[in-house]
Length: 180
Image: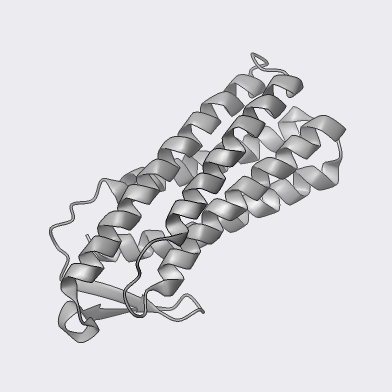
C-alpha cells in the first residue's frame, strides 16, 4: 500500500517545496512589472503605471510571498513526517494523527489568504494560491482516508488533488517570478 502512493507524493512535494523556496527567495527590488491574468491562466505583463497603484501591488506581492513562505514551511514539515512513514518510523495510525494535526494549519493558511487585499486584475493570483492550499489539504485528507481504509480510490483521489495543487501553484509562482 505504501509504495503506490509514497513515491509519487514525495516527488510532488519535493517539486512544490523546491519551486516555492525559489519563488520566496527571489529579490523583490524589481517590482516595476505586474502580471495580470484572466481565469484561463494566460499571463500578460503590464507596467505598473498601466495598472495603477504601485504600493498596493507591492503590498500584495509581499503578502503573497509571506503566505507562500508559510505554505512552503508547512509542506516541508509534513513531508518530513511522510518520509518517516515511508521508512516505517511512523505507522498508519501515527500518520493519520499527524495528518489530523496538519489539516487545521492548512485551513488557517487558507483563511489568512482569503483576507489578502488584491489589486485590480490580480484576483486569480490570490485564488490560485487558495485553491492550491485547499487542494493540498484535500489530498492529505484523502491520504488519511486511504491509510485508514486501504481504499485505492482514496489513494487516486489524493494523487489527483495533489497534482491539482501543483497546477494552481504554477499560476501564482509564475506571477511572483515575473514580479521579483
